[in-house]
Image 1 (cartoon, rainbow, N blue to C red):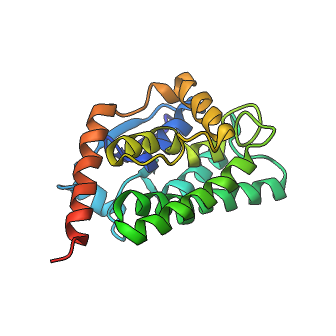
Image 2 (cartoon, helix red, strand yellow; image 1 turned 30 degrees about the vertical axis):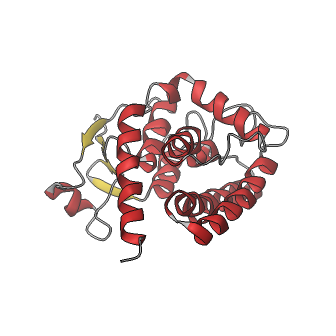
Length: 224
C-alpha cells in the first residue's frame, strides 16, 4: 500500500524548506500543497489549529507540526540518508544548536534588520556574538555534521539564502564582512548542493517580500 505524504507550505517559508530538503535527501515522494497565508485553507486550519501556520507534514492522514519536530519525524520514519548522528550525545548537541538557531540567532538577525537606532546597534552586536558560536561549530567540517548535509545544515539552511537578501534590502553587512570565513564557505557549499539549489525561492520575489516586510516593521516602530 502506497504511503500518503503531503506537505503544506508556502512559496517562501524557510521553515518549510527544511522539510522539502529532508524529503528530497531521503528520496521520499510527496505532494506539495501551497498555501496562501493571507487566506489559509480549511485543511491547514484543521491540521494545525493551534498555530495555523506552515509547514505541516501529513503522513497517512496524520499531521506533524513544527519544522524541527517534522525533521525528527522524517528521520525516525525513513532511515535512508541519516540526518542525525547515532551517538546520543552528538544527537542531543545537534538538537541544542538547532534550537539555538531558532530561538537566538534567527530573532537577533530579524531584530538587526528591523530595529532602528540604539536597538538596532544592540541587535547587530548580538548577531555577531551568535555567529561566532556558529563559526566555532564549523571548525574542521565542511558541513555541520561532517562531510555530508545533515539535520543541522537543514536547520541553519536559511542563512545561506535569506541573510544575503536581508543584507541587500537593509544595507547591513552581517556575514559579508569576512569575519566568518568558515560560515561563508559553508553557505557556498550548502547552496551549491543540487538538492538544495533546485529548491530556493526566486530571489527577486524574496527581495520584494522582505522590502515590504521591513518597511512595515519600521513604519510601526516610527515615532508618531
